[in-house]
Image (tube, rainbow over all chains, first blue to last red; front, side):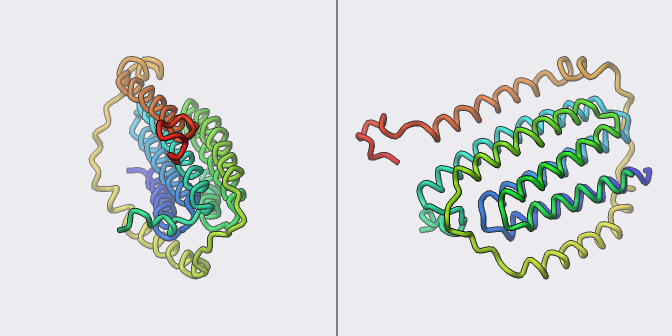
Length: 102
Length: 163
């Protein structure tokens, strides 16, 4: 257990915490996606740091590439949904999406 | 130097959440990606660094800016004004828990590493070949979803009423 790993994992915890804060408190849909992106950044940093510390850097890099590709696909779909919702409701406010609320 | 890069990464991520203007938030996110890519390069993770720099700092920022330009509306989404007070408290609490807990928590993880054999190409194409199939599936699913969401509503059988 070296201090380099612990320092980087501390940064990972901060990134994931900031992302969860954004997901919990923001009302703008684009800001919610930015929160998801920040959590993904934390996950990729965790994978690379752990791979570099434990001597499995190549495997960690291949996993990070998978994470990034899936992240892009999710983001493109989510942004398309947001543009569609914006044309419908003329707003980016997530509180206006109450049609399914019942 | 490494600590400075991590601090820059965390600061730009916090700015991306806290800044009210969406364009500035997207650019802050790109700056955070650049910091993360430099961290990857310093750890000899060159392939991940290149992907982070080109795809996340480049492509995702372009996608965000395009979406922001397409959804530019006059109405401003009101966010809570308590962020100025709550976020520093939340951040300090998180930092405190981080410092107190992280060392003992990570110390319990057993060292299960085994030395890796082969180059990046061998691991990517032979060991993780199923991942590649999954990635191709995810990309096609994303493309089909975007096509389905942006298809013209005039072609619907109900005569264009479908929105």
